[in-house]
Image (cartoon, rainbow, N blue to C red):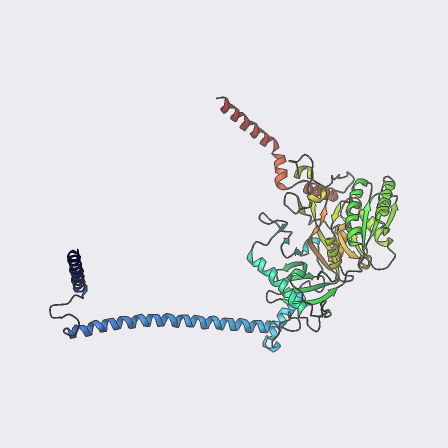
Length: 542
């Protein structure tokens, strides 16, 4: 056994040695095959082929040198690009520093005022002076006013919808989103770092620290663009635990934002006198009072109601509804004025405004088929200022629920119909009846025109009076103001112009374009469905 093991070990040794020699031979042949080709006079590179070796290594050296030159050129180009970007960033920073200190109306930026060219400052300020920011522009008609569009942190409420836009939507375009974010940030910069000329006092937090506002304190904003001047922004902020609102006005004169003013607004003691002219329609008034009780009595609690009733029929019912609300909610801040004459909306609002004998008051001219929220009442207070501004919100008018919800057995409750969708309603931008304005401004301008009789017209006349004057008209859609659908009757005694406006309003109020189209083509649709059903039955029988 020992001898056989020794023989096996010897054979294994020679086998491994043979494999090693075979590998060495293969490696040698591979090196010969891979060696550079030479001419007849040349030798292999190395010590023996000294001439060819120099050329070969010179070629290798040149190749490496070209590689490093290419790499160095690339690095130089990258360095140059970085230097250019750094220079651009430095110029942007310098520009921002200059813009931070553009006159006294900058938005709180710090820098050297003298760095900004005087002609640029003069131009930017002239843009603000020409725009309708500090004083109203005298316009020839109601179509000349530039309406605002309102927005919150998440949504924009817009008038001009077209085919792709909606009454309420999240900004889809990035430039619009970036614009509104920038404006809110600029407003926060103004509030948190006020200038000496700002009309606001420094407030401390509960622990004595400086009170800092953030984007969550943004309540609502409005913007509009005068195409030859710039964009105006009205921003409102409020801390949850504070009573006052912060109001910031910004203007972008096709350039950097410029602060117009920053002020504190206290609306805690602002009473609104809601004036409602009424004739008959007692069921609608009962529904109106339900909303009034929920919003004005239980939530806002700073409201006076003035009802101007025309005629005798239904007067006792109106009194009963008011007394019922009074007994249930211990509410006594209302006035009922009875006029035994034909209904005239302008006459009723004039009488209601003059029935108030306690001095200055903010008035909201309202109709019995209007549904409003507590948020709207805040907007009413924030956007009307005596001797300065009147508020003309655009109402969202709901379509006929019998058509909108035709697929349901019964339309949903009113509260569930209050949505901003194309098929549920539209912004009533041709209506000027709902308005918030101070009593002194209303009396100064002369109130409603008593020569206007019957339906419509009186509100447009009053609106035009303000457009022809110096007060600023705030015109914007607001999310908390709805016109509830009701059947309209256009009387024969109306003038041709009034009758046309009444019919136009009636058509606009009925349903959306698509729903009206479905009604127009209903017979055609039913015929098509019958044909489809007949074809299906025939195929089943066959």
